[in-house]
Amino acid sequence: MAHQLRGNDLRKIGYPEGPAIGRALDVLAHKEFKKLDKGSALALLKQIKDDPFKYVRDENWRPLAELLVPQPTRDVALNPAIKDYRRYGNDFIEDGARKQMDVAMQLPITLDGALMPDAHQGYGLPIGGVLAVDNAVIPYGVGMDIGCRMALSVFELPATYLDQRRQELRKVLQHHTRFGNKEVFKNVNADHEIFERPEFREIAVARQKLDSAVAQLGSSGSGNHFVEFGIVDLTDPANDLNLPVGQYLGVLSHSGSRGLGAAIAQHYTKVAMDKCPLPPQARQLAWLSLDSQEGQEYWAAMNLAGDYAAACHHDIHKRISKALGEKPLAQVENHHNFAWKEVLADGRTAIVHRKGATPAGQGVLGIIPGSMTAPGFIVRGRGERESLNSASHGAGRRFSRSQAKAQITEGQLRYQLREHDVDLLGGGLDEAPDAYKDIRQVMAHQRELVDVLGSFTPKIVRMDGA
Image (cartoon, rainbow, N blue to C red; front, top):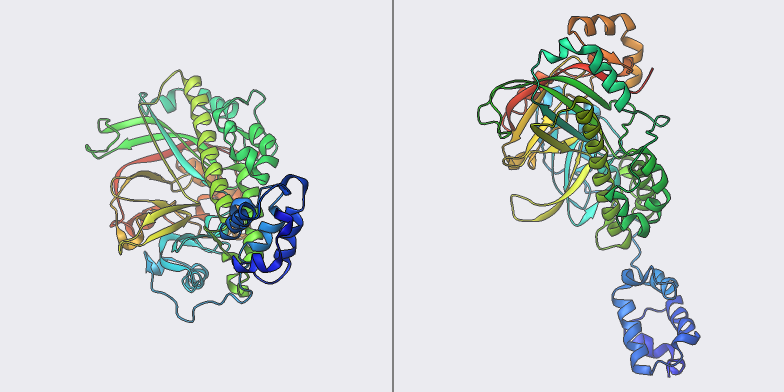
């Protein structure tokens, strides 16, 4: 019988000295386990010791499993040497971003890295940073707005439609988009397939955010998030969109995973910082091993948030398409603030974080926006291994939000909008065109990373704000 087991029996199958032995014997004394014979009890306890992560959600065995989960060392140190990494447009990148990337390249789990030409300082990994690590994921290496993405729809309507129907298109954006934390749609599809995902039941932080995720479906965030009408100008006959060269009406959206992604990022960053204490300069680069329960939970939650962000974009474009009475001829999407499992040039499998950087593998389509008065570019990845198959996610900030508000006037913003024939609905000085780098310079520094297939020029821009 199980109650005949002694501490020595558990030591023989590898149980460590300490509270785990007593906890195991206590659980076996429960009514439901008393009928187990000695061999079966030992086999069960060995399974729990060998794979405690499998049992951390088991109501009976969780207290024992948590004692057996490997605990991180409390003296995680950085490597003294900074691993080499590629910088695209190095003279164009601020010192703060380079210093952050240097620290990331000292992590003991780091395999490779790259810095994109739109790079600027962020939290942990710089915006525009690409970091490949070994069997681990860094929540702040992904970022707060998990799976933030660009989505472009191209319609069979001429560019002149913008001038002919400008007032009507303004109303379409005002009526069919919602921004920030206060605006939501009243007729959200609560039966959307994304809400049937098991992660919303199995992962506590996702379960807690389910109601707000339902309410925020199809809405966009604040800050630099937008939905805009503009002119798509396809210039490459082999553009992969299977469309003739020429100009079309387009809709471009930029937003992410809303409150769901933020909650996931905040929760698992705290977990990572507790499990993986690093020196102060690297504290926000704390990681979770993918061999750990927490690492697997974050990975599943990250993918859920990314798919939720995609569902929001699809809802936005569906609403606008219906309002236009047109189906898109073609669509292009790409996302950043995510981690992918990929094989590096040397054959090693790595977790590649792209924070404010986008995939640019061979043949991968994407769109890299400029600002509200500058064009974005429709691109096809060239599969450049030196950049870890990556490219920039936009123009990148030249001024921080506070700097922009201090240095740019309302008059300057209005003048630029008039000069470029752009209607702005919402927005603020922190998103003024002068707050961003010159997108053409950024593109010049990544010619070896992507081929340009065409452009998107904004004309009616909707953002958070009055």
